Length: 107
Ligand code: SF4
Ligand code: SF4
Image 1: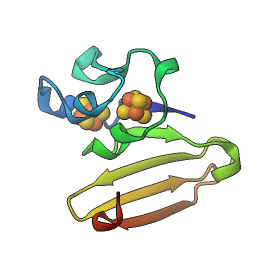
Image 2 (image 1 turned 60 degrees about the horizontal axis):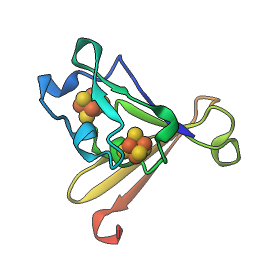
Image 3 (image 1 turned 45 degrees about the horizontal axis):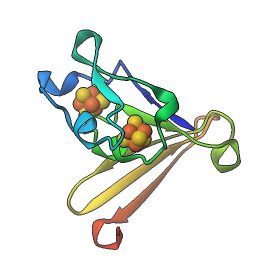
């Protein structure tokens, strides 16, 4: 597993001093890098909690999934609001599965 920041989507949250992804990472692994975009300071320390994936308003952070879950190269993107968390699973063959989880069901 692990994450990837998509440079084609990350806009640095408008130059925010501490964008949501940086603020939420419990391991302090995300930093503002080249061009104001986020980069991963040390990917080996990431424990795949997906907090940054959910927090990014641009869906610019993808999480790689184990091959058993979605096939080799499958990724997960997410977006959360007060009412809903929307997970998007991208299969390597181009298929997309979307899972909507009501926030009241999220512990
Ligand atoms: S929250 Fe998303 S768009 Fe904002 S800086 Fe982080 S990765 Fe980039
Ligand atoms: S998945 Fe969790 S530990 Fe890994 S970079 Fe994102 S917020 Fe940090």
